[in-house]
Amino acid sequence: MKRALVAILSLALIICLAIPALAAEDVVIYDFSDAKDAEDTLGYNEGLTNPVYGGFSQPVVTVEDGHVKMQFTGNAQTNAAVGGYFYADERAWVSELVEQAPNYKYMRLYVENQTPSPFYMALIFAEATEWGSVDMSQAVLINTKGEKVETVVEATMNKYDNAYLQIPAGFAGNIYMLTDVSTFGLGENPIAWGKQALTSWAKVTQMEWDLRNVGDVTEGNDYMIWDDLALVNEIPATTEPGTDDKPATDDPNQGGDISMLLYAAAAVSGLGALAIRRKK
Image 1 (cartoon, helix red, strand yellow):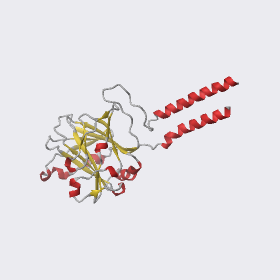
Image 2 (tube, one colour):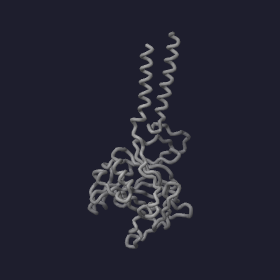
Image 3 (cartoon, one colour):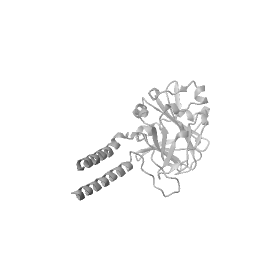
Image 4 (tube, helix red, strand yellow):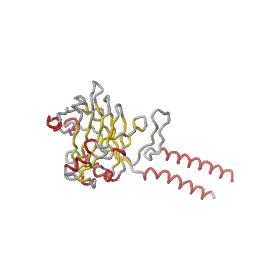
């Protein structure tokens, strides 16, 4: 009896300790801390400044405290479109993202909107003929308080499909987006450009970011921050805004459930030892 109990408890502990190893580890692909991000204004599309295409204002990008800060320089009219491209042959992290993304369920990007108004953000992955925008209707926003923020999408903005996610004014936190390319959108404009739906991450040679309707800005309240772009398999539990509840720890990478299992196993072990002592 004693040997059987010890064997059962040992197996329970082994299983508990093995669970974290079985869970895929989050991987940070890029932390937006390279000087190149400031030098080329985060891959800014300079064609946007051409009056033919709207004469939009070019932002100023700096790398501060291990993240990138984009300061908007125009007004509601000239900040209406801001965007750029990251090419795999110029930024090694894009190639790493392309290689590893199929092994994970979500992309996670830290974003802050430190402007007076909400604006919209799209992420697009493409190559010469294939094109796909992340389905932002399935995105999840979690602020730094652990609160889930409502997902608001402009379904047909720029004649794309569910591409533009609203980033609320003052938002600071992570955005979780599906990596499954079968969920990526196309839209009327890309089709008119001769694009077909993206079929595989292996085809991707560039990542495009596009902001719309940034709006008027004021001094000190005129910037966006990007930090860690990561790949993950879990979205952490959240609380409802305005409540005192603390997020649960169902995320296997946080280890909350594992600690509970270990505690339970230890408790059972203690009870078993007590029973053995009493039997003696």
